[in-house]
Image (cartoon, rainbow, N blue to C red; front, side, top):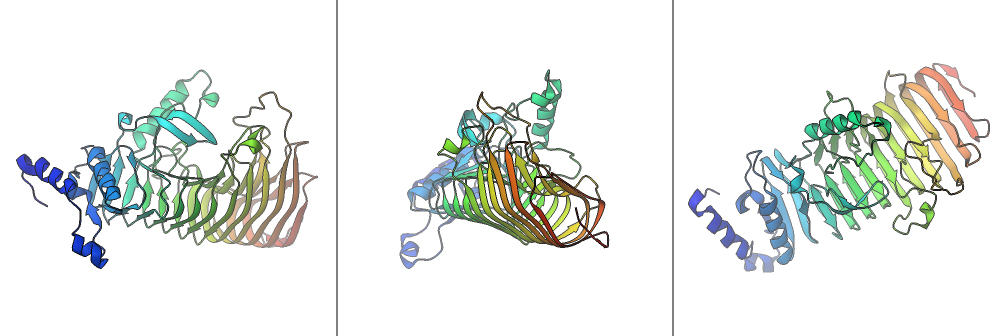
Length: 433
């Protein structure tokens, strides 16, 4: 649409005041309930902050019964946007919806983050609550514009009196998408790029499909802080299929609550019935990580995937301050391709980066029925299976049908861990602990 500057505002306001598609078309059931943000005041100049124009379109579509907000080709900058029920988002080929790096465009609010609620923290670029059936689709990109924010984080952390205790939430940063309390959500085809914080945060959602999406951090940035690909926070029935991960934190993380009274947290139901398949894990801290905030995680299958330069494939973090129950966790038919010795196939061990018992007795935890089956290719090291002494019971861990080349072929195992090996070949020889 070509509009002279002097008349643009009046015409846009007129369009917003009218139905976005004809009544006859609605009655005929035609798919006409799509509206481009470029036709409603958004400017693709990689500079103008378009929050108000895009949010007005979301609200208008919601008021008219729903529809799809379309981001066309071009770079559109925005602050925090809030989706509404029955309103979807489509990013066309070549479309970029980009985070503003001025966090005044992300007014602090109460939000779920790191296993609890912060009363005042940065919302995401895309926020959706109670949006059953939400669809975020297309071949376009959600861009977090993270590099200056990452640089600022490391500058603050390195200047802190004790950098190791610098809080991860010490600098406001925007996630790319936070979807909460929603069912039947589909995310397909979209690239999540350079997120300032987590990429896709799902909280208390059910029946979610993430298909053929990409989660990326530039190769030249060594450690972009907390750039998790997908965080499954207290979610059930999630399928992640055909996705590509190249990040500098966990590719997929199961999360919930934390602390000695975590099992009493009614806001953090178990993470369960998770299916990950046909994905490529190119870079990251973990293919599938249980923790850093997690209580009950069960019925997880990761299968038919390729793993490259990822530091851990199966990573189960054992917090000494949190009662945890990890059960029925299965990795199968994985093809490995890495020559970095520090990268480990299995890591089940204590994790105490932010340990705080709050004066309580150390809690008990259980790891049970964990299987790794059908691994082939080359990788760095076998890994570690180690409990929190006196706190963790590790039982029924099975490694089966391995044919791998490892730079470090020793599996470090606690004597008390119930481990079984079946047809495990390492560097051309049968392996036993």
